[in-house]
Image 1 (tube, rainbow, N blue to C red):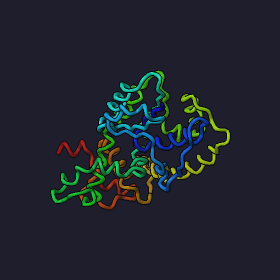
Image 2: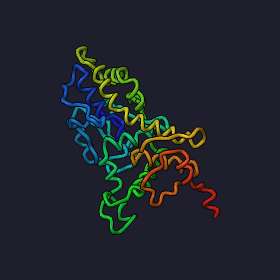
Image 3: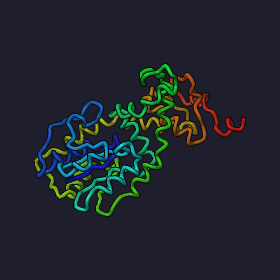
Image 4: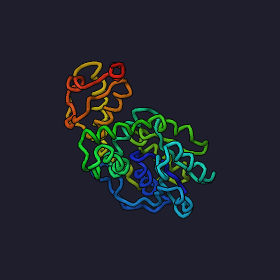
Length: 287
């Protein structure tokens, strides 16, 4: 039995598909890359969301738990729970982050591919903004952006996950999958005692899959350019997703600046417009 332990958005469904369709030993499954870049076109074999379901794990060939998950534990606590549950004979592939940028970028991947995940996280927020709100749909864009901007506060916890790895686990990053797909899949197959099907067209699959990730990769590069432009050359960009805007707001907060966000339902699209609404946290706290 193989466990693929991954953060939502970090290609866990793609890896289960690859193990099944590019190996000789496992039965292939029907699935296509969806327009949003996800592989949610098939049903994962065993995708537990609560720890009590883990007792069923031996019934399946591949399990795909996510972290944070399993009764909404933190990333590290989720991994610790899994670590305590699996045996030494079971194979575990840990997809983890090794840079802050990987964590931030994955929030974009998760937003576009698993929006219900974000709706579930925000479900208790509407009434905190306005007692008349009954759902996320009632919230204004600036309120959603503000709420989302605090989600990356667990970035440090995500980066601590790698420290939980065991000597017999295979650890990879999203970048390994995104930019070195074929070699990474072959390494996973070897680790899982599977062999590459010589008839499979892994290169053709990767070309199609990679192309459909590019709109997210490009948006994150735009976010990086926006943040860099505040210290350098002026920059103009097209609109970002609400999650992209939230990431910008979050990073600025970590740098000691807040956005004057009340009623800011239209996010800036130039460096100067963004500078005009920045508030230095230190100065604000001194007044």
